[in-house]
Image (cartoon, rainbow, N blue to C red):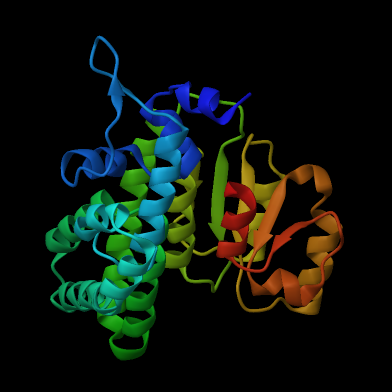
Amino acid sequence: MTLSTMDNELFPIRELSAKTHVNSVTLRAWERRYGLLKPKRTAKGHRLYSETDVQRVAKILYWTQRGVPVSKVKALLAESEETQSHETDTEEAHLWSQQQSKLCELALSFCSHKIDNFLNQCFVDYSSAVVATQLVEPVMALLEKQSGAAFQFLQSEWVKFVVIRIASGNKAISSKQLPPLLLIAGSPSPIWRLMALAIQLSDAGRRVTCITLPCDMSTWIPIVKSEHGYQVVLYQDGHWKEDEISRLNNEVQAEDSLTICGAAAVIAELESHFHIYSNPQQLLSGWLQ
């Protein structure tokens, strides 16, 4: 198959979303609001895309991940590589700093609906991976050090936001080729990190369910062992005690379909039948490549 033939093969927006791991709502916003995509249309008006659009989305992600405002990306795509690099240094340095300051301000004001509106707008303009790494993670880390009350409030709002979003995503997923995911945070791992993982997996087209409170081993092992049809992903930072490691090795078998990400499993040097990733980002890179 030639490159030209591949480019002539058209597919709907749900397939573009699956190929690029960018939510369809964001793809439509990039088209309507910023003119970044120009899909073809069927006779009934449904959008159709090609491999050229996949490549274009990759370029858009490249710039937004560097901190370029999405409103500036169209011009950058049209300019030479040399000009792009020269003119965007200042934009990259300030955009996410400004967004982080805004979210901190909203958290410190304990204003639920404004936080929800702000997050919604961010997820319209940017991919979930960009929002999670460039906005949510640094803000949560900062608030945890500076304001316990604001940290807990924002974490609660973030959990609520993600639960609603993945519920909507689950309804839109038609394919049942992959098993649904059940995400669990092992105590005392921060639940907000689990939710950041959840929203990225959901936007990549996986059916996701989350337990929204941290669980200790006595709680989550029975869940893993039960016949529920889920592929379980455990996020566990910190470290386990020797008796916990022994219990895990003895009670959880390969057929239990458990994937563990976080420092605890790496430190414990678990038996080979476990699927282990050192952190959520490594899991995402391995599953979504």
